[in-house]
Image (cartoon, rainbow, N blue to C red; front, side, top):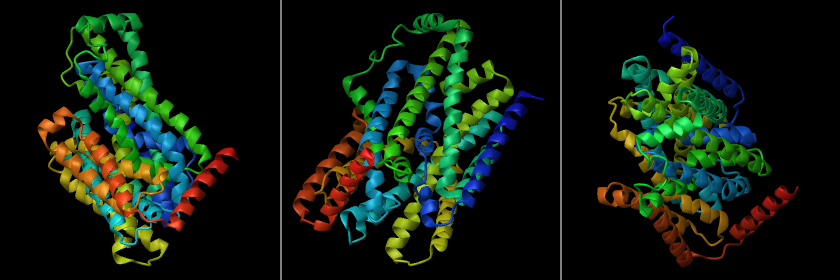
Length: 495
C-alpha cells in the first residue's frame, strides 16, 4: 500500500468520526437554544478546547511554524499576544458574560445580548451587529474553505475543487444537522488531535537533530539572531503584533462558548484547561519550526515552502498512517474554525436579523429548520466565493479579526463592567470601530505602521464612552439587572 493511501485512510477515518459526532448531536438537539447554544450544557474541557480549536485554525499548524521557520523568534510575539489576550478574556469576560446573558432575558447570541442588556427598542443595535457578523463571517468561512481545497490539492494531488467539495461537504453536514453541540464536540476532538500532533512532532524531531543542545547550535549556525525575540523588530512592531490579543474580547465564535458553559464556577477550570492547551500548542508550533531549521541545516537541504515544515517533519518521523493523522490535525484546525463561524453566522441571520425584521412568532421547531437553512445558504455563498481560489480572500482573516475586535471588543467589556453605557453609545462605538478598522486596514501605509485593531479598538472605546455619557438617562431596570448579575456571580463563586 502506498504512503498516500495510508494517509488517505487516516483522513477518511477522521471524517467519518466527525460525521458520527454530528449525528449524535443531532439526536440531542430539540429546540433553538440547543441548536444555537447547546442548551448551555458544555463542560469545562469541551468549552476550553472548542474555544481554542475554533480560534486557531490552520494558522497554528502552518502559518505560525512557517513564519518562525522563515524569520525566527521575532514571529513569536503574536503567540505571546494571543496567549495574554485569551487569558484576560477567560478572566474578565467569561464569568460575567455567562451570567449576564442568562439574567438578561436568556440571550443566546451576542447581538440579542446587546439588545436585551441595553434595552434597545429600535432594533438597530441587534440588526447592525447581526449584519457585521454575517458579512465578516461569510468571507471568513470562505477563506477556510479555500484552505481546505488547497490542503487536499497539496497533500494528495487532488483537484482543488474536489478538495473544496470534500472538506466543505463534511463540515457543512455535521454543522447543519448537529448545530452548536456538534460544532463544540467536534472542536473538542479536533483540539485534542491538534494538541497531540504539536507535542509529538517536535519531541520526536529532537531525536533527528541530536537533542536540544545540537538543535540550538545548528539554528545559531543558520543565523545567530534567529533565537532572539528582539533582533530586527521595533517597539511599534511588537505592539502591533501583540495587539492581536485585543481581538479576543470581540470574537463572536469564541465568546459564544462562554455563554454555553454549564455554570460560572466551571469557567475557572475551563480557563486552566484552555490556557494550558493554548500555551503548549503554541510552544509546540514554534518548537516544530526550530527543529525544522536545525534539521535542514544539518542535512544541507532546503524547504521550498516554510508553511509545510510541520507536514514534512511528520512524514519524515512517522509511519505513513501516523503522518496521515498529522495531516488530519491540519484539516481539523481548518474545519473547526469553519464550523464555529457557520453556526454563529446562522444564528445572526435567524435570531438577530430575521426575528428582528419580521418579528416572527414561529415555533422552536421552525426556527431550528430556519437555522439549518441559514447554514446551508451561507455555506453555498461562501463556497461560491471560494470556487475561484482567490488568495485575496485569505488576507481577510487578519482583517476580519481586527474588524470584530474593534467593533465588538470594547462594547462587550463596557456592557459587562459599566452601568452607564447606552444603546446609542454602543451603536456609535461599534460602527466607528468597524469603519476605523476597515479604513486603516485598506491603507497600505497606515497598515504598515500599526495593525488596524489598535486604532479601531481605541476609537470604538472613546466614542462609546462619550456618546453614552451624552445620551445617558437613569434606567432602574438596567441598573437592577446589573446589580443582580454581580450578586449572582458572587453567590455562585462562593457557593
